[in-house]
Amino acid sequence: MTDTTTTSEPRDLGFDPDELRERYRRERDRRVRPDGAAQYRRAAGEFGYYAKDPYTERVEREPLTDRVEVLVVGGGFGGLLTGARLREAGVESLRMMDEAGDFGGTWYWNRYPGIHCDIESYVYMPLLEETGYLPRWRYAPGEEIRQHAVRIAEHYGLYRDAAFHTRVTELRWDEKAGEWVVRTDRSDVMRARYVVVSSGTLSQAKLPGIPGIEDFRGHTFHTSRWDYAYTGGTADGGLTGLADKRVAVIGTGATGLQVVPHLARDARHLYVMQRTPSTVDVRDNRPTDPEWAASLRPGWQRERMENFLATLAGEPVEEDLIGDGWTGTARLQRQMITGAVDTTLDPAERERLDELADFATMNRLRARVEELVEDPATAEALKPWYRYMCKRPGFSDQYLQSFNRPNVTLVDTADHGGVTRMTEDAVVVGTHGYEVDCVIFATGFEVGVSGVVSGTLPVHGRGGTQLLEAWARGPRTLHGFSAHGFPNLFHLGSVQNANSVNFVHILSEQAGHIAAVVARAAKDGARHVEPTVAAQDAWAATIAEEGAGRDNSAFLAECTPGYYNGEGSRRGGAPTSYAPGPVAFHRVLAQWREGDMSDVLVGAAEPADG
Ligand code: NDP
Image (cartoon, rainbow, N blue to C red; front, side):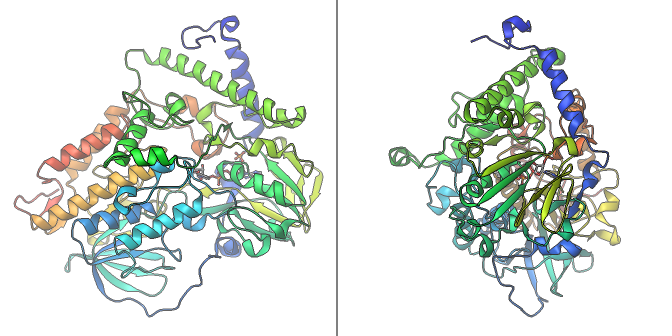
């Protein structure tokens, strides 16, 4: 095989980079829409039906007017991990709050047939050793993950005082009392000394703004609110209710890839409405090997998680313990996810070599389509023409094969910017109408950093200052956790920190960090926790300094539209997170925790002030 990293001659490479670049541009131009991100609409108002909880009955209760030490907003893994670590740190007075009817976050809402996590379960599912659980599969089904969330909550006593089906509508700092006043959509007006916000980044279902969507008289729902009453079956399949139905699924992202094989098997006819094909790499899921399980020694999960994180972040590792499609493409992920890069090469040469490696990977994935899909025209339409990280990478050993079934039709909507319109009984693409009984939206989620940043959760800090006003020119925090003027308020997520595709690992570190700060504040008798202006300015300067030379605008400008590049409208820029990546960031945090925390502990031995 040719080593594509040392040559650039088309005859040696087996492909022509100029031709591929040109093809990628043509395919991108076919898809760029003038309305960019405005093409979508929220599943709210007249479309609120799409966001209703189909899984748990809402139970009426009296409004809460009490006080807790810590309130955690969000019962997904970020909130659960924070709750767990706070309990370990001795915090007894703790309330978990979520809009959902139970714990689980993403895994509460998403229960569609075929749902799996495409990150290896042994590194994705947190607190395995602490709860004494070992996943049954290498890539776990969603229901197993949801049940694990419940297991964590039970193990750490997090159901006690929890409030579900409750949306926090306002946080207001009461300076005199030194605590937060928390208002919710259930008329609660309660108090908390600390508030931790972990409300997720991809949690609001979004719908395409397809004209006529409201005219459709058949059945319709979003994948994150699966209607099993209509389809029959479970997340394992067996959708018997669809046996006599013509179904259209709109969207072929990570969710579409998992749901299509089940719909293909069970629907009378399935139309897959595709605008941009996903990459579909090998999945190779398998049951947990009992021999391997027996060989695990205490500390194994931490070691495996660190190994995965380091491999993805481009850090030196002795051995890649996971060895899957994520670790095999770590180098290509650097365009979108911060991490270490080879500094022995000048940036232009590094980019040239990365691009060649990218072409080679994408050629392999296009060849896989040809190998698995029998009809040549369908195979051609399923080939992705863009650089690997322009879209979230996909994995499946069943998706492409679904198109070999006689009851499945791929409808390529790219030339029309997506589905053209909907009528009472059909989905129309161009001038062609496809009559269907049911339309399923696998159209993803709004990309928000959290309700705090998107403005759906107003926060009024000291002196009534609104957080969004204080952050008008971008977030200002220390390490992404807390901000001056907003005492005792912590954020989890991806603001001014470092990220990874194993987001739960990132959340796990953040949760541990917050618990350590809260514990230290108690030990040192701090009045409250709030970074100094100097500390948050220094962190902003560090981010800018480390991000110099890491601008990804050129990469994103060439990308096919998607939520990574604001549907083709956002041109990227220098990283707003810590460029050396999560492993280096966690080292920064660990070192900081070794210190006296005087830049956040106010009213302790050494008062820290702005
Ligand atoms: P995505 O946003 O990734 O995909 C939405 C899909 O809808 C795209 O294929 C998009 O096409 C298509 N679409 C949108 N509007 C139209 C239109 N008007 N006409 C036709 N098609 C349209 O959503 P997903 O739910 O698939 O995934 C969201 C995220 O959730 C993932 O990126 C991932 O982070 C996470 N996820 C993770 C999983 C895991 O295993 N860990 C599994 C599933 C999801 P186009 O690409 O052209 O915009």
